[in-house]
Amino acid sequence: MRIGLSTFVTDYGIRPATLGKALEERGFDALFIAEHSHIPASRLSAYPGGGDLPKPYYHAVDPFVALGAAAAVTSTLRLGTGITLLVQRDVLHTANEVATLDLISDGRVDFGVGVGWNREEMENHGTDPKTRGKLIDEQLDVLKAVWTQERAEFHGELIDFDPIFAWPKPVQDPHPPIYVGGNSIAAVKHAAGHADAWLPNGAADAHGVKAQLALRDEHLGSGGTVLPITVDASNLEVLDAYAEAGIPRIALLGTPAPEADTLRALDGYADLVARYRD
Image (cartoon, rainbow, N blue to C red; front, side, top):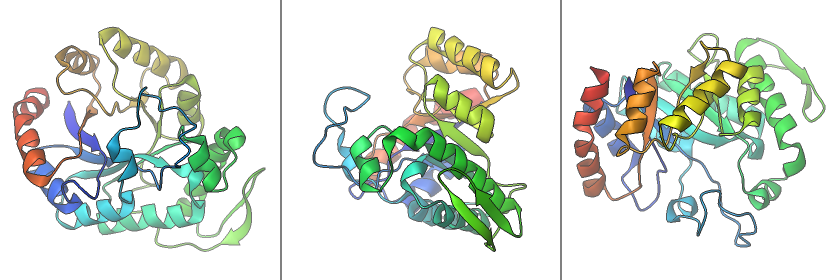
């Protein structure tokens, strides 16, 4: 089982190029970066984790700029978004950004997307929270059309445009794998109908792993791809359960910190990376 890292990259933490290089040197499989363009001061939407919103949410850098920096100093590390808040983005700009990152990294992008939980943040982008599920389905279909067709067009309920030309095309064929993040049945259904894989948060215990696999089997089939992210590195019960279930890749939860602290933490994961890779 290959192990990556899922984290926020922030203005107060390790720089993305240094982080990417350090991960590759230590045998990590991938880097997944979270996204928040801003945090509304109202704080009306409750943080799903409970309590106060953690500091990294306020300080997140742009994931595509950060992953571009990591791409420049690595050659094997997978470069992922975990997750891109797609419903808050212009879909054609996003298509170009993902394809460009896939081009400059020689085909190493894993594109994780989701609808998000902060309704005020969505509304600031002009997104209606009530239609975000329909919107992400259409956006994913748009992305695949733009990436795979010379003349792409789309005519949906929320997105509509006549034929366009858009380059570059992604290096990966037919396009970078699309992962839909979220722990709900709705997220799994979005993944089953419009994406390549499901990107849930790491389970809390072995029972939770079984429940995730049951959802996978029901909606994606037993061969469906699941990539658990934000897995607790200290929870060996969960890590063993994923490994025993044949999950080929996971991503540990990383906490943003200055360079020296981050490198020490990564060194502490070395035995874990080797243990599950063997």
